[in-house]
Image (cartoon, rainbow, N blue to C red; front, top):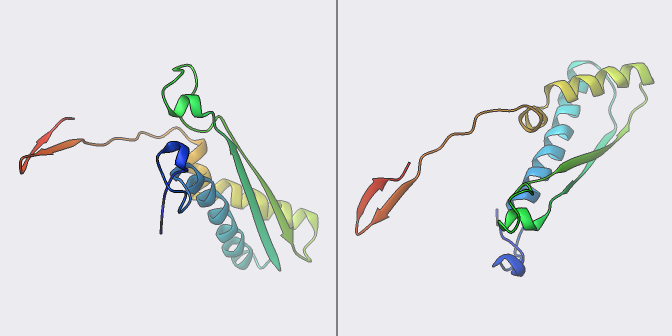
Amino acid sequence: MTVDEPPELGGTDAGMNPVELVLVALGTCQEIMYAACAALMNIPLNKVKVNVDGDIDIRGLLAMDDSIPAGYSKIGFETTIESDADKETLKKLVDTVEAHCPVMDTLVRSIPVNGTISIKKDGRKSKLR
């Protein structure tokens, strides 16, 4: 997978950038969950398509304004389901998918993210954090 940034951010636009991949992860995870949950719930599902978009202000990303978040300020999605099932059954499917989609859960729930930083210089590695 090629991951890149647009030329304005030092890339060559050869692929999606990391924040676009977050949107792709959400949409594809939901589509997979619809297929899996529909099969488990015996709900006929002909097709599902999820379109995802997000609002991001580049001033936050480039540390131009500390009051603006570096990441998305809003993420939205539109799901289109093709099925012969009734609305009540499909509502149960939607509720199940939205409650159990791991990417959705990761995005909406506050979770700790921890890491370490190592510096390698002259063949030696030292920990910064």
